Image 1: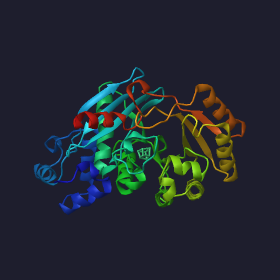
Image 2 (image 1 turned 135 degrees about the vertical axis):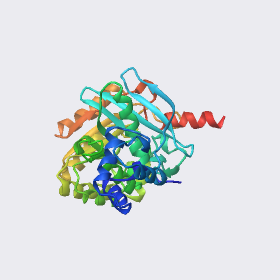
Image 3 (image 1 turned 90 degrees about the vertical axis):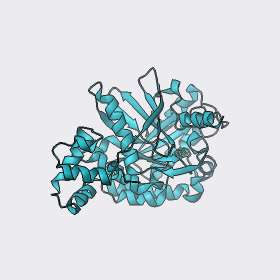
Length: 350
Ligand code: SF4
């Protein structure tokens, strides 16, 4: 199978064009065709010689995302289920905010991390996506927004998969996204979210980027976190916190702590107090994002009542911790990660 053109960073493409005996600037022209003009046929790259177009055609292919279905929420959120070349299906979500449009991308087909509140992990990990398959999701979103002259202004890597278990592809995806000759998305408008893969957090700290980091923390201590997230047995709570502190010292960037509130499990005021204590003890520049969990039929979790959510929130605020309650988007279309794909797999199995 030919590699995907979207897999290549500008620097990698420069190396390739030089190997073909062409000047390096041709790579910039190719980037312009694929990311600014958004063509998907090498033949249309009319400022390149015929022979270079033929070489491109012989060496690369475009990622074809086949739309299996999409659902549109009353708040404008659109959730896509795309089919890949090998018939796996992935979800991508386009969200409309008053400050712009964001895309939530998937980095793996399925996931092996096993968070107990997540539908994406139910069938385990099927395979990693390539950088180009992640890029293609943003290009697809941008093409839809082109119809109304809008642009993708931010990206969240919070779809299916653990991006730090597909580290190199995720980093190449990010390099392509932020490149000024590519889609040119501002680094501070991109957030990568991890379940706490400690070695990758240290690596990411050294990447020297302005990209935001979010940690799915979901519990204030080791014992409870291990119950909710088996990954915590591999990378215990304190080790995750130490890695985050290292990242913060290295980058000076505030970290988002994602906390899914699960009724009767991790949503008591004591949990909020304990989390605040940890963040204060570690002197962490933190923002806690409280997420009322979506009901996952396969799991036995219930939603936290609204008044309890506010009690939890106030307990953080009272201790000087910056916190917000996530505004739910696309709730009416099952926007929780993995649910559309799970339904698709179920109907295929029938
Ligand atoms: S929440 Fe993310 S890391 Fe956890 S199982 Fe789901 S996809 Fe994987």
